[in-house]
Each structure stands twice: as C-alpha cells, then as structure tokens.
Image (cartoon, rainbow, N blue to C red; front, side):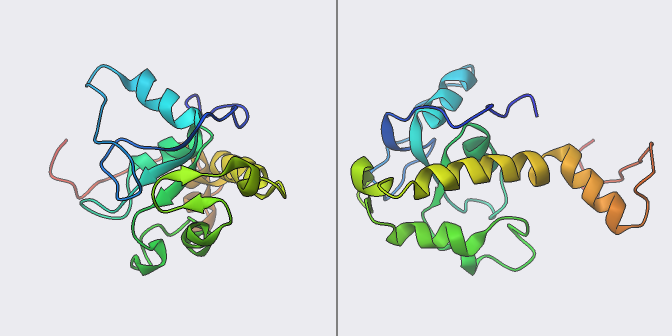
Length: 164
C-alpha cells in the first residue's frame, strides 16, 4: 500500500516502460539503484508498456498501476491462461489498443484520448481497484474469506518454491 500513489498524477508522456516494446518504447534504461526513477517514469506516463516475459503474472503490472498509469500489453492479455492475470480486467486492457488517440507506434494524442474523460476514469478506477483488490492485504483477505476463515489473525504460508 505504501507504494501506491494517492491519485493519478499529471501526465507528460504517452508510453514508458522498462523493456523494449514494439510500441516505440526504449530499451530498459534503469540501473539496479534507480527504482525511484523507474517509478517516476510510470507516474509521468499515460501508459506503461508491459508484456509476457517468463509468464503473464508479474510485479511490473502492479507497479504501473500503483504509479498511476495504465498497463498496455504488447500481446493480447485475453490470450493468457484463465488462471493467470486472474484478477485483472483482461478484456478492458486488450481493448485499449483500439481507443481513439492511442497509436501502436507509442504515441498518444492526448486531446483525443481523454476528450470524453475515459482515460482519467480508467486510470483512477484501476488505482482504486488495485488498492481494494490487488494489494497483498486485499488478496490475503479474499483468500481467507473464500476459505471461510475471515477472522483468522495468523496465517502460515507454505510455498512450493525451492528458494527460502
């Protein structure tokens, strides 16, 4: 929760991202100690370019929304297996590709994009959705409620991951 901006910040750029994108984005340009610059780049952009790398689910999507931008997938997110991106609005994120004012070369015509206020509503809505549904606290609450254990105060998580 501490990493989530309070409101959608003012935007200066169409697309930004930490990887090379076919949407006109630059190659990864942040060093290992430049996390604040990385997040600032997303805060100042309408969209954060993202894509499937080793898998569909990754922290980058969360970082983009937590910074007040909208994730823009290189690939169609509705093609992800049903159990991945499970809590994300995949159809909506796919349909961004056809929004007026959004161009596949990585540019945005701001006057066209937000003429109806649709972008502002979407960005603010995703930010609220992230706070209410996608933080670790919200997901833990969802899991406990689904298990019928909403009142639990201590939880032991056993991971199948080989690393401690």
